[in-house]
Length: 88
Length: 97
Image (cartoon, rainbow over all chains, first blue to last red; front, side):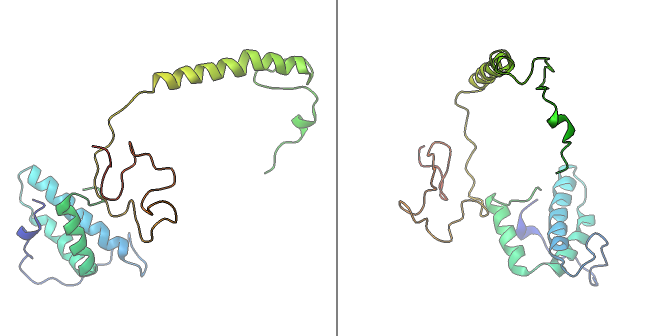
């Protein structure tokens, strides 16, 4: 579920993330983090209810576009070690 | 801080009881023994009831806590100034098992 190695990028063409009115300014850090959290929360809830996690791919795509790769890697490492500070 | 100044100019000590005596020593002595000291006693009793050892939280090496970019200038550089080894973990974990 939260196993990082099992996540594969979804198929198909994806354009750049759309405008999000919650984060209108130039600084998109919060946008990146929020989508990262939303992706993992989406995964957790959907797998808990036994449903398909296909709708979560949107968040995956957005945070992969917006977040620095080093951040994503360090967060995934923290999740794996159980020391991620965000609420998932 | 626009404090209302008019009540302060009144000579009457309008405390919680709104007692009539002047701002005299008798009033304050009464308040001390009737209000202040019983409140202190009640609060002491309350903290005694809430006291006792409780299980300390499990240690997780979060990276945003217990940060050591530079050693502390005292001791071994790793302990905070008011370190309590029963409840304060070091960056690597608790000291006592």
